[in-house]
Image 1 (tube, rainbow, N blue to C red):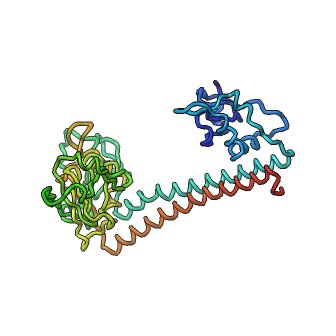
Image 2: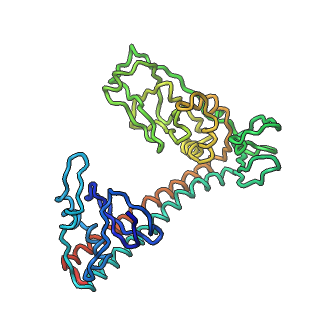
Image 3: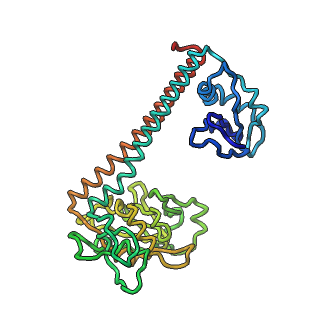
Length: 366
């Protein structure tokens, strides 16, 4: 069905989730799927903004939930949706309700955009503090790309360029403060004695999420594991060979006493006299560093890995500890600020919904 500006779309599957929206001008003429009920004709006594707000309210959602049918994919039909009862207050109240929610949603979008901007600025901020050069004009015959000056260099055949790695190659003298990761990280290979430790005595990693959270195996998963295991101690760096280019890197938290990992998760002790663990984590999470790791994977495409020797050979700029602390603190501040902005965005909408629901019940004055 072709959609028109102002159409109200209601997701017929699980409508209690509140997947209800009005078609904006930029989507005029787009095609809507059969998974949505379209409300187009609205009587003159009902303001569209008010109707949209009511359907989003607990009164509208509760009515749609009661009229659902089905078990796996509970849904509401258009016929049953048409039976939802809508109170019709005077037009001034409808206009006030619609305006209140419209203002709340605009404010939420502003807050969310500010939060997103803060999070997106982290990458550029960290790279800037590390002295990364961006946008160097390419020479004749070279592929277009940016150049990062602080990740080391590779031999390059002038007759054949590798477009994937050109972006990460350095030309000219190296910047000050470059250090090999292998000089900052010491590989830990402390094998678990299976005669001494039972599965129930160990916390075994199942995976590291892209966000850096360690997920542990359940007891049944642990009992079925037959490979070698290695200890990782508090504040050790751990990464996933397969998923490190997507951000699967973490540190052993203090609340995990006896963590064991498979050979797919190399473990490193960090020289904290030279570099902060949190600073290393920031570097690994920059987009350009993750892009570099992606080009350095080896093996089958579906299971390509970044080997420990590759990680250890890379160079990063290591500023003094005081500057590292400042960078880490600034990034933490931006993240905390982004969380506060998102919480405020949700609070603005929640307060507006509570207010308009009172207005619908005529408990509040306009």
